[in-house]
Amino acid sequence: MGVREINFDGLIGPSHNYAGLSPGNLAASANAGKVAHPRAAALQGIAKMRANLALGLTQGLFLPHRRPDHRWLASLATNVGDAAPWLRAAALSASPMWAANAATVSPAADTADGRCHLTVANLVTMPHRSHEWPETLAQFRIAFANPAFAVHAPVPPPFGDEGAANHMRLAPGPDAPGVEIFVHGFAGGGFPVRQHAEAGRAIARSHGLDPARTLHVAQSEVAIAAGAFHNDVVAVADGLTLFAHEQAFADAATFYADLRRILPDVAIIEVPASAVPLCDAISSYLFNAQLVTLPEGGQALILPGEARETPSVWNWLNEMVAGNGPIRRLELVDVRQSMANGGGPACLRLRVVADPATIDQRFLVDEDRLDRIAALVEQYWPDSIAPDALADPDLWTNIEAARAALLVLLELDELS
Ligand code: SUG
Image 1 (cartoon, protein in one colour):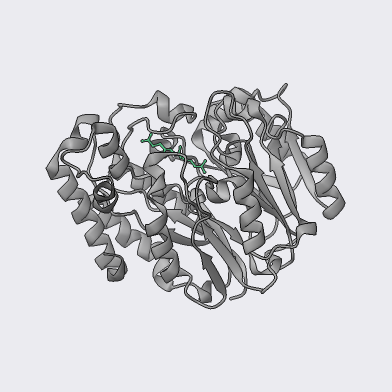
Image 2: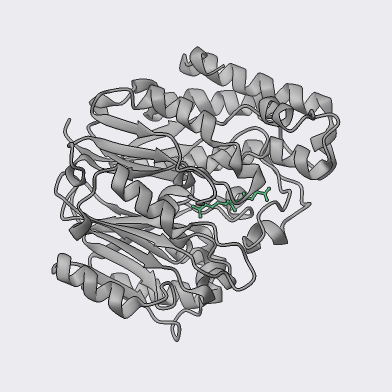
């Protein structure tokens, strides 16, 4: 088959709810306490995967984690019945759906040993995400067991790492050496800084990246303060194209000059604040699009429907595709259930550049497998979860039964 980009989406889990657990994530805070719809959420995610397949892209998935996370609660000397409501919500969060935060991936063409390296993110800043990594690591050890991969355990705390959401790669092709860019925060204007500079440096070293082709860049404080809790809310890269908001980086001029020096062919599409104010970019998730190279050539942006509803964003996008730039096509997807927790199309996927033949096939999907997963979601995923329901033992049982049925369908009993 050959090396290509594979998008692994996090299947949205049966415990999807709005608990307002992420300060600095404006959508999640604004929707705290609303009724969530896990079944509709998962079906929206599956429809997005189908849209990717229809574009001729290769698609994989990661599984929802065990919820409630009894082991984590036990490590805190409590249990799901006795835990304080916020802690119970943290143990029930469906946050592993945002696969862009699962790991940082360096394709084989960039690494010293010629393997594709993946470092699982520690997600230490937010309690509800800090207990994702053991199960992510367990899934990766199965999915990427082939010697073509090197799977690394997380960078140790206190160095916060939120994975690919703060990492970009620019390269002339999937199997050509690229430039890897690690983006960190240094101040959040009152909000937490979730990606620490030292984490990116440690990952670059352990992946065996060439320092001459690796950049460490600071996010602007103004972007974090406006709600860009991850870099992928204000910038995205693919191929030789960087698509970013004018206010994304602390020192964009130096960053762009360094990039052009290493990669003279890079196309930097910077959206000026005068055309799209930061608040519109963040509320519409313009930059949380999947920027993909199509099999027939050219690039497309897979955008959330909210982009069309924001006039400044939609006008700008239409002018862009009418021009002569590399991005020629816009695809809209409906991921509103995830968006209400601050997760757009790009948050829901992790890009792994590899030969699909080297992946454990149980983690890859086609239309037929998605049909079967969708039927299971229809049968087992709760229709709705109101905030009070998180304390209901019947809900815990239903969530556990849903995941157990999925493991049977995917023949992944070793994850039970
Ligand atoms: O970590 N939301 C996630 C959204 C992650 C988006 N990912 C990327 N930008 N790549 C977060 O803030 C909200 C869950 C809650 O509040 O219940 C949440 O965790």
